[in-house]
Length: 504
Image (cartoon, rainbow, N blue to C red; front, side, top):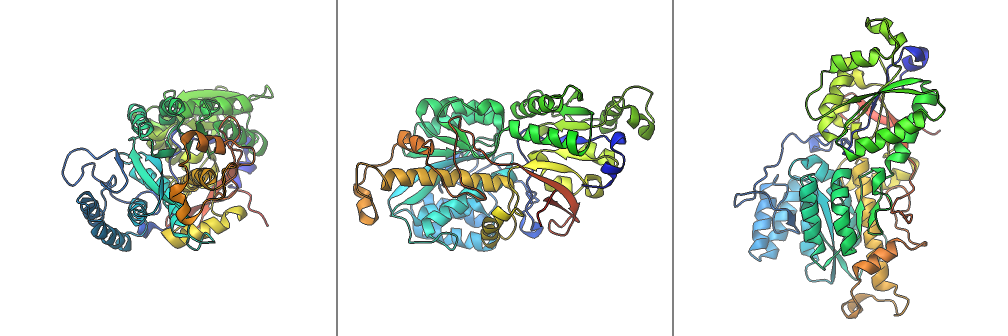
């Protein structure tokens, strides 16, 4: 955190950015496109033309970013698995950080082994970088389970994991339709997804009625808690994030007034705003100004001016009319409001500190350079945490760079489903342990059994930084991480996300 926020705490406007779709996330090897801005948007058509398919386990490419991958899916459609495998390996040689290709490759390699199926739902059509971040976590978990690689000790398992990728375009109507399709396929034993709180809320009822466990890696709205025993998540809820950020604003920055920018049409944004305001005003002394943001571009200078008019001390700094004013500016938008939020940070020109949530954890923020320096964010995971080091090392080895919190939470969700399925196959209390050739004779695990396993008091799965366990509400207890933007050379922008209070 910049020292200037401590030198003049009463002349501060804190911009608190927490955008609803939990976007952002940065990869630290720009040449490989690992920062989430890979320079091109994959076309939304398949090789035969028409709209991109919504589901695939290797028959179609949802992210049409590699000619060899497209050729591999065509070979798979024609029943030529040998050619499909060869083309996918070739594609991965050229684009080793492509998780869709790795998932399809491992699906094909597992074709002759006993398989169990899960699905992962991502916003592939309109948020391809987000989709890849989520898919990398699932691809990592599948590869470790199926191949028994260096990140996982012991022999290969008796069954192989098959992954179906579904695209909901981050649209609640499409999300519900995707959920209905997955629920209708009895082979699907669990779902990693959806991405946003809005899409997860839209699909949750379908999964609950079908008894199909859904584990979201990135939906944080408080309203997801307790919707049913089939609705879970690996990411902390907005209650934790809102409280943590409010405490930073009050206790560390000593702010008594903040202006809150949020999107009233976003479930996440509304949820985070509510939790932040509740904690910020808990002692009766905090004051909040609310400003709305939508998908239309915002007049950043006007927005800052409105916040300044809420702050007496700020008036002197910015030359506004004499009135009672704001000491902080809080933006709680969603993915559609990210450009507006960044415009406000840029207009601020680093004069005032910024507070934010996981959505601002993005290369776009780092590209603002000194304007973003000192920004404090609350996220669920960071590669520099001591408990994250082993996982972060394994991910660098496979993908060529540091991964973000969405990848880590997606990995945790896949790990939880793998562990629950495996327990139901190999550890049934009424049968002897199953392994090897005996697996084909074992009773297939049911969705209800997998769901029950996830809720057992003694259930736990190895996660990216901590064991994955769920409360009765479907929530996970995971401490949030406070980070800040500082000068550095990992992202290629001259600035990096670092732990706010690193240990010794």
